Image (cartoon, rainbow, N blue to C red; front, side, top):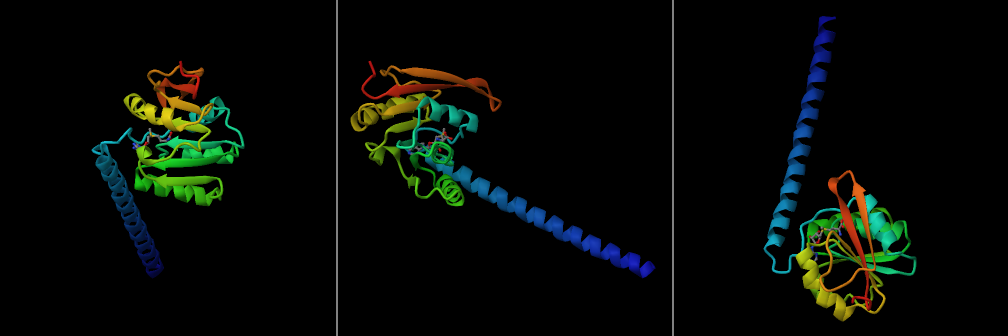
Length: 207
Ligand SMILES: C[S@@+](CC[C@H](N)C(=O)[O-])C[C@H]1O[C@@H](n2cnc3c(N)ncnc32)[C@H](O)[C@@H]1O
């Protein structure tokens, strides 16, 4: 009997040790990955074309953005600074549109690529790992941009020069100076106290 008790005690403590070690290993791995991501974001902060930190838009707000843009199946949406790809994924999955994401950050692109693959959206969603300023945006029929307000000012000449008439542009939490929005919406979400401000512009109807 005593031997049995001893044996059980040994087995359980070994399992406990293994679980503990696995936990520590997982935690270490996660914190290593997180610090890699933080380092990459810090490197990007120093880039002269850096336009905003990665702040994901809550899904409720993503849906409001796409509805405000009146996104349809035949649209081609470009998300400028696509982060983890959430706008692209919803545009393709829920609205059946095609979508292109442009994102500086390599690890965010990898996250988005994995989600695209898992959801089998490769035919509708394309990712470009690169700088917004080096892209041709002219094929877009809808553009979304959640960037710093001063960054919206920087990309405005590019949008004016490249986008064709009637392309819809939705900005989050910032207006484009010199442009006049055609519709605006405020969306509340539990993610933060202040509501999200969305602005819809239509190229060719700025002033
Ligand atoms: C506020 S986040 C928005 C992410 C995503 N669009 C969303 O709504 O959830 C802005 C993103 O823009 C990216 N970014 C900043 N400057 C950029 C640039 N010049 N070219 C490409 N991406 C850029 C950042 O890495 C970040 O992921």
